[in-house]
Amino acid sequence: MASVKVVYKTVFNRRNQVDSTGKAHVLIEAYQSRERRYFKTGIRLLPNEWDTKRSEVKKQPQINRLIRDKMAELENFELNFSAVYNRPFRLKDFDLLAAAEKAKLQPSVTFTSFALEQIDRDHAAGTIGKVTYGRYKRVIGLLADCLKKPAVDFSDITYTLIDDFNAHFLAVENKKINTVYKHHQVIQQYLTRAIKKGLFKVMDNPYNDFRPEKEPVEKEILLPAEIEKIEQFVFTEQHEHLGFYRDAFLLAYYTLLRIGDVTRIRMSNIVETEHGLVLQLKAQKTQKLVRLPLHQLHPIQNGLSKPERLIKQYARTDKRPLFARSHARLNEYVKEVVRLAGISKHVTFHTSRHSGITFLTTKLPTPIVQQLAQHSNIATTMGYVHISGQHITDSLDGVKW
Image (cartoon, rainbow, N blue to C red; front, side, top):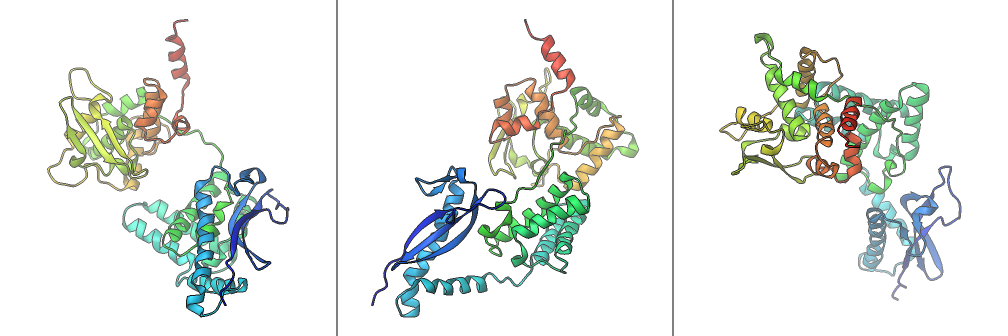
């Protein structure tokens, strides 16, 4: 006898109860012959985030896709059941799916061993430096310490564990909020990678619900006068090698490029036009094509622009990048350059991007700067802008009241 088709639908806050955060579960209801079963989607929402009329999450197409995928997984199991087991499907047969999923998701590695292996690979590839390498490994170890186990299994990764980890380092260890936030970033990074490799379910990711706290930090920027000091600084023979790192830093300031893009520039990315040089590069972070008219950025009267001069200076005949150095070494030597130039500010390579964006907002409309900086929205651009007292004074002096 053929089985009765199961009817599926999404249900929010089935028991009309919310947890301590004010959220409730989104469930999938399976109905067959007056029987019902409910399946967790791993998604919890505030009541105002649920569209009752449409039975879906408001303005969250990715989350709604996850719910549909889960529902499709249940339905496919039901539809294929008779052919596999040679009998009609009943609701309780979903237990077989749960058992199969559990067996399939038992990885041969723990989260700890996976993360440590990935950190080793990132270090060997030069993606992370020596200091970052040590910090990342410590964070993975701290997560295991929180469980009082030598290693964290993927099944251990729950909202409770992440919440306990957060509370422990804020209260017991008395760590600063932003320090703990960076710990979470490391865990999130390698957990996301495990999800992409099929070792962990995206629906089980505790960071779907847990949001680490972060305090705003006022980052240092270099003013145009300080950039000029760096540009004009003459290195002694002892420090002559630092000229390369100074120029890489200045190129990032002129172009607003991230460190990962500066270190990837090859001559094949440089197009010579009738007006001057143009840089075309696929951004490492956004995967968007960046097209920068170098001849129009920081031009010099009757000559090449500043970024054009640097490209010409370091031009190569082979296919190697012009500024191929590890991120750790670039950061280390840029600090030395800034110190030698007599600037006492705490500077990293990324300071070039902050400083360049801030400078350009005094010269160009912010939407134009947004495009040059490759930001998807203008709020991100404004987050990079650090208006100094001198900028305010100069702007007010220029107003024709």
